[in-house]
Image 1 (spheres, one colour):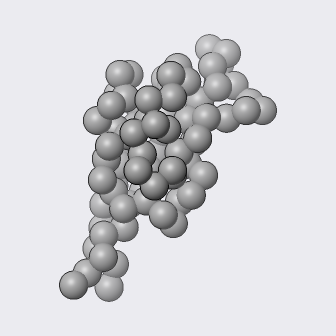
Image 2: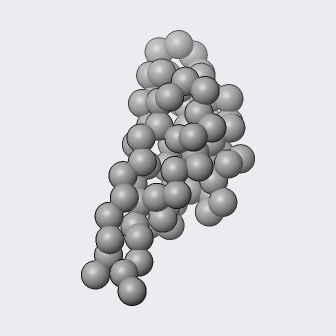
Image 3: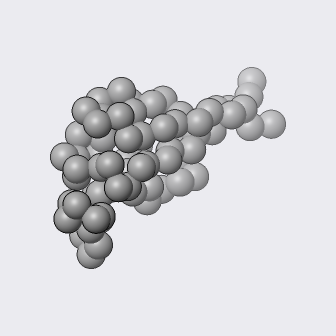
Length: 76
């Protein structure tokens, strides 16, 4: 059985740093930045454990600003 692999892409300039995606991710793939902000002055979400993502898209579903895209692919 093939394992699913995911990739999470955050539109950092649209992100308002609400943190809902961080809480929603069951694998702790995302975190809010602590040392940098976007042009609007928000700490934005970023991927911190890229290889852990399974593409479940929980983060994208809860994002109120729709700034997260999740890609899925099968691993051989």
